[in-house]
Length: 214
Image (cartoon, rainbow, N blue to C red; front, side):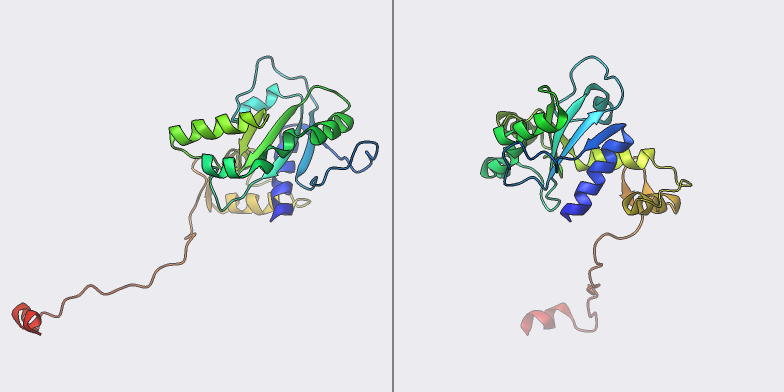
């Protein structure tokens, strides 16, 4: 699943005109223990002025020049405050070792740190507290997977050819055959196994008084 997550995130940034840089040849910096979830991105066009929102929207990407991105999707969960408090590893993208590596790869001391997550809580109180905790880890931005997928789907043409990418080609086919509604990101087929039907019929041949006596 991690490879698939990384592929989606990489293609999301590429579709938004970012160069995705590699770090394999940068041996001069200290090796960090966990680099498999990292991407290094740099925008190929000038950025727009003004700050980007902490929880990134698609339009905020035009305000980011370069960044180190860490993918911690964890699709089985929403990112509630209790989970964030119990998982300091979520701040890994802002650790000194990661920043040092990012500066070496990007060749510039100024860059943003972006954490990709499944989704934050929709409840205002929990969402606000989650953002506060993630800011406390030194993270500059959070990107929810729903935003990422919606943006990719909106950019795909149902009649395009994305054969070099299995992920984009799969999404294009789902869009082509109307299995996905772009705005709601809804699937038109059951996503859960159907429960067996349980009969609620009452045997009217037995009087209720007789049932109570039994």
